[in-house]
Length: 397
Ligand SMILES: Cc1cc2nc3c(=O)[nH]c(=O)nc-3n(C[C@H](O)[C@H](O)[C@H](O)COP(=O)(O)OP(=O)(O)OC[C@H]3O[C@@H](n4cnc5c(N)ncnc54)[C@H](O)[C@@H]3O)c2cc1C
Image (cartoon, rainbow, N blue to C red; front, side):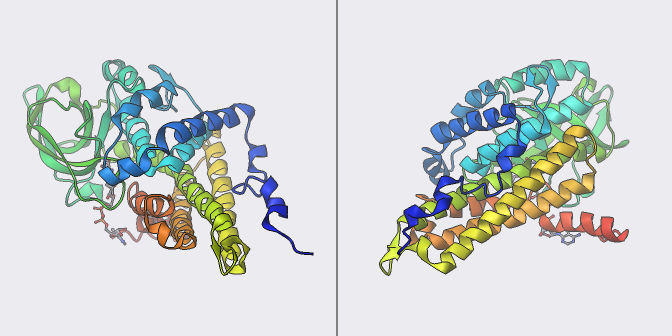
């Protein structure tokens, strides 16, 4: 008896969920996932190839994301949705199945810019900016990295000096997401008291953001170089409640957590594209899916996707319970980025030549994941964090 592909039992399953992962999610979590997935299917997937090819960030979908409660989603009050960490992760994963650039926008807005104001800002700063940012009426950016200070932000040169009651900032920031379309920038700078954060309206004289062009990754997303030339701010612009690198790091940890989920969304989408293609594409008289080597690739991808989601959920549940240790975020970020990029590249091989076009998602995801594994702590930085945890010996310098 010959067994055709259509008789195969995996056709009854969600191919990206071999372990009934969904049984671990609550009804509201499943409903949220369905809602964001529908948005991605309708508003992002039909357009992403064009946005990516043209290097366009689709500002027009920001209000739609706000309507879905995705901006500052995990924050409470000020018009934010007050979602759990797991809900935030689920939404990020669905967005990144559309494109990493869209999840990155939500991350820069919510986990970085809004989080900085929420965690470290004055009541006036929170009331002025958070409701507008949650509603998508104001876009925020987060300026930490500099041309000569990346993995080691303590080397930043941007300096804010006191001038009477005012602050005057000079310096250059690089790779700052959304800076040329943002209304507000959270800028981290050296001061005589240590590193401090400043809430800078981007219309302030001396603030100039220029997009970085000719990118091969994150093309449906914007990153800029910011020049700060005698940017004069009132005393009220400083984030009053934090001094030192723990300020930006507290925000980076939120964003790093989101990536644990996001990377698996990109991997899942790449896998699904490759699986579907393998079932239709005939070579040597049968579907690619019918060859053992193709099945090996698909099975290896599915196993890592299932494990990656389990890890994300476990870390998310610990975050919600308040029991998460910071090094555990590094476990998730390092593992899930590393596996996601492998999956996206392997998925591309199944697509053959067609896989190098924007008609299919895997190479676009793989290229985006080059950025995802680089920002919010590179693979090497997270390895050093975990190496330190295991051995007790810091090896950063
Ligand atoms: C798409 C994108 C969006 C971004 N968005 C933002 C943003 O919104 N705001 C912001 O502030 N920044 C942003 N960044 C910057 C990002 O955080 C930095 O790129 C990242 O921290 C790495 O810094 P770097 O690029 O200067 O690389 P470097 O720090 O120069 O590192 C280069 C290489 O050296 C390795 N390395 C560095 N130190 C060590 C060490 N001690 N041991 C071993 N290896 C080491 C790194 O792992 C890496 O492989 C973004 C970057 C990208 C690509």
